[in-house]
Image (tube, rainbow, N blue to C red; front, side, top):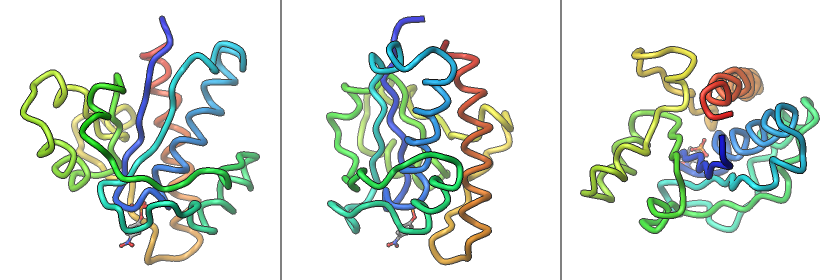
Length: 159
Ligand code: 4NP
């Protein structure tokens, strides 16, 4: 399949979606080679601007790094309406992200780009990637595991 453009979205763009971006990029690279993966556009954003300009939460950075993925250079940015034009797939972490993104457009083809990230692993169950922000380390490892599995399943569809 031709290169795709994928945007991962959560609330703050400091915990879940930065890990999603990093995990997905690594999974893609391992599947199709670094050279081909560079042709894809992979990014993340938040539905809020609470943490705009910040690096990922240190706990997310540690969790990704334990799995060999460096996300330290990412910077939080808010989702913008233009993202509906720029990206083929908008992968949200939970249903409140879904509501917040979807109310920014009336265009049906834009709404169709929005998918719950865990729908590939648990079809039809509306499962969230749980927000680990207020919890402990285990929450971050759980997020990593959920995102790694879901990334493989989406790649089964997109490559
Ligand atoms: P994220 O986690 O949406 O996975 O980045 C959060 C980060 C920050 C806040 C909430 C969730 N916050 O309220 O500041």
